[in-house]
Each structure stands twice: as C-alpha cells, then as structure tokens.
Figure (tube, rainbow, N blue to C red):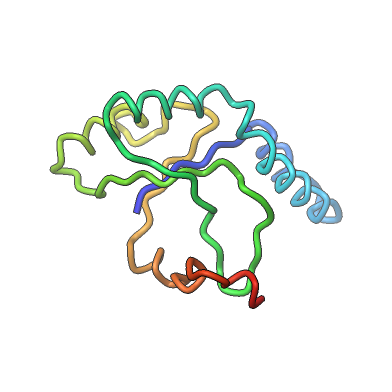
Length: 135
C-alpha cells in the first residue's frame, strides 16, 4: 500500500526537540498542525495535479491507526491506487517524481510511505460501516 503524508518539516523538528516536560504540548501542537496545515501546503496540490495528469488514482485516507488509538480529523494523507511494484513503469515514474535515486524525498514537506498489505490490513475492521459508532 502506498500513501503520501504532508506536514511542515521545520515545525516537526522543533517539536521533536522539545524538552521532555513539554512533550505532551508538543504532540498536541503537532496533531493540530497536521489537521490544518495540509490545506495550505502548495506541494500537496502540485503532487495531486501530477497524479491526475499521469492517471494515477488516489483518494483521501486516514493515517495508520493502531488498535485502540484514535486520531482526530482528516490530516490530508492520500492513498495511491498503484501497486508497489518496482518493475511497473508507472510506479517507476511515480518513484522518480517523488524521490531522488538515493531514496531521499524530493519535497521537504512530504512523506512517501510504503506499507506492506498485511500491516495495512491489521485494522481492516476500522473500515467497516459503523466502526466508529461502536467505540
């Protein structure tokens, strides 16, 4: 499974460096940032435009949630409907667009995530209708 996340890298680095007694506040600031900032990061729309031009289907998705952990609000992540197949020419084009040949990401505020299907399916029940109603 492939997905993209968008965030302010400089803010993340500042919050990660917060002293231990400020970590809870830093985590809250990070969560609040992720819920709002994706809408204002121009790179997100640029990438979406590129995906659309290449015919790569995508859709909004939630970040990966561990069982029993609840994330709040949409954070701008997108699921890419393309197989993680290094032999597939369209995947090669996607990877070349998002990453340098040494696997560093080209864009400062983007995370390109590859998740094994088995891991992604661990919490498949969370996609069932009514799941959140039963929490």
